[in-house]
Amino acid sequence: MKLKDFILQHNLNYKFKIVKFKEIDEKILNLIKDYSKKVKEDKKFINKLKKVNKDKLDNFLLILRCLDFRLWEFPKNWEYKNEFGFFGLMERVIDLFKGDYENINFNEFKKIISPKENNINLVKLRYKVFKNSLKWLHKKYDGNFKNYFEEFQKPMDFCLNLCELEKFKDYYKNLYFLKPNQLLYLEYILGKNLIGEYKNNLEELTIFSDWEIMSLFLNLKLIEMPLRYLKKIKRGEIIKKNSLLEIELRNASIILGEEIAKKINLPSYILDNILWSLSRKMIFKIPKIKVKTIFY
Image (tube, rainbow, N blue to C red):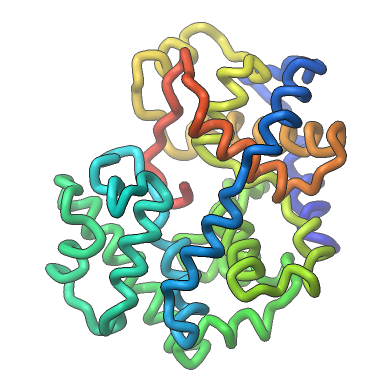
């Protein structure tokens, strides 16, 4: 079975209780089509990887994806080397890999990765995810993520076997999101220049459901919900992980994303890059959705 079929066969059967969908009109489709011509994030990502030692690249891609969560809490921390957000994080992880990253202690890790994250518990969580990922890598794959990919090259195998790590257990009951899992698969293919060989595999990926995509669809009024839930988001309240609201917003994002992808005839992974970039550029009336999670 293909990964997309596996995810959708579970998620499409879900009976929504609070979230409703609106029709995707031509105005929104045209907005996405027009903006797609401006998106260059993939090229930027690939160019930055040139700073990473080739012998460390496989592990770099794993660790970068492991450390990418809750960037909204201390945005100043990711303003680094003229970048912000994910690309600011990427620059910090590039610095981490210039040294003996595997034997780095907590204080050194904080200095490089999280110097402006004032919540020490969040920094400790990031360090724990980092160390646990390396421990798993050495225990099962001789310390090299390349060995993992060579064993699990198909998207389904790659993404589901990653669930051995807490960072990648991105599912709830019988609903599967697998945001970091799928994104790591894409980033590995891009980073290792394998897109020609694995292009068909990439088309098995769904939309990567996270706060940027949920927030974009909410602001485009493709998602509706009762006023009491909407007021919570407008007040900037943190949405509880695995709450009914979060689960339904994430699932709605996948279903809407797949529908848009079909309408404009684009693979989901390419559409996701467009939507992610558009979300970062648009000025929203409704604040971005915040969830304390390690999955995004």
